[in-house]
Image 1 (spheres, helix red, strand yellow):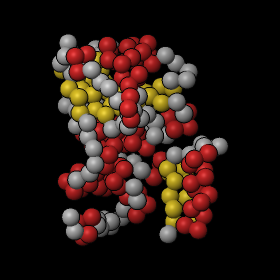
Image 2: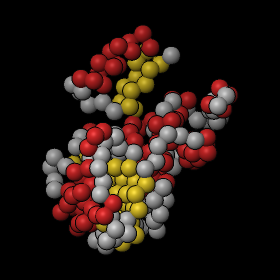
Image 3: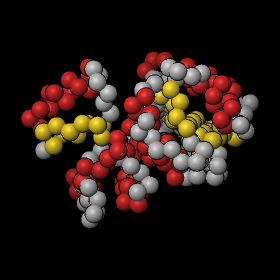
Length: 216
């Protein structure tokens, strides 16, 4: 792969900072774009990090009503709710009970962006026939999903990984259209000479933090 194939020109009128994490934004797009769904179908996204937000935004752009499941009130509060959407803090409410009531006819999509086999297992009974699991989470040695448990409802498992120029272009197009939001997820900006402070903030998590930008 040539170096030029990994360079994108920032479209006129689009803030360069908005595309500074384009590869990661594409991961969220990939997770949300894989599953098949109809308008109004219920989609649950596990994880309120940046990939979780972009997965939720992509699923909503496809017509789903989306529930973003996380554990951080500040991050959940950054998800713009449209009709039918909601957020769920697992530290405050029971996900199984809430999602059962919210999805009504069952989930069409379960997107895991954090790597939680336990949460997938808990929510699996709430999925409808011919539904989809889309996972970009890292499971390590605990990443065992029993396919036999997916067969009764004929659930499809997607395991998107990496990036492609086609998907990067599609992600960039959605950013241009305003269908994907990135700037609202940026909580901190540091000059490059304070990079050590930025990493300390991310690692210590002593204060709410989500997107961090280093200004070159």
